[in-house]
Length: 94
Image (cartoon, rainbow, N blue to C red):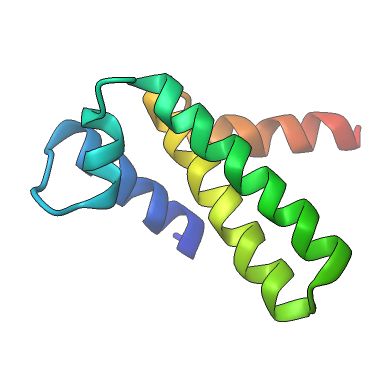
């Protein structure tokens, strides 16, 4: 299990077993529902673009991790396992 799998596992756990004070739980409980998660993906995408244009390597990596994290929250919200994304990458290489 790599670190992405570990993080995804925690995200799924927070979805099934909400934990007080958890950021992921707060997103899932937000009254906007999935729209709040999608809003965060939009914000993080913009931050990646700005970092790529104006930032250094550290900032690009940091913002990219934020974007990937929020994409993983959306995938879990939609019930899509991370392995399905991996399978799509494999399919595209053929």
